[in-house]
Every structure is written in C-alpha cells, then in structure tokens.
Amino acid sequence: FKKKKEESKEFQVFSFTNKIRRLTSHLELHRKDYLSQRGLRKILGKRQRLLAYLSKKIEYVIKN
Image: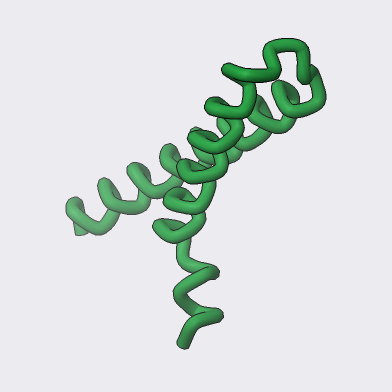
C-alpha cells in the first residue's frame, strides 16, 4: 500500500513542494549555491509539468 501511495501523482506534487520549500530556505542562507539553484529550477519544472498533467486529467474526467 505504501508503495502505491508514493507513486501517485498527487503525492509526487506534495513531495516536490516540500523539496522546493527546503531548497528555498537553504538558498536564502547560501545565495551563491548555484548547484542547488539548478536543482530547484529542475524540481519547479517537474512540478509544473505534473500539475499541468493533473489539471488536464481532471478536466477530462469532468467532461466525461
């Protein structure tokens, strides 16, 4: 059951959001940590794509 929960798209969005919060607070202290900035941008992109997918999926379910 636990593995199924971790694979859900909603859980992935939740997990990305937590990572974003952690990286943002880290970058407030370490402004020149460019590797963490790159990681943050990658996670932001992943979350954005996942949210777009979920919104399209919800639209499709509502229409049908």
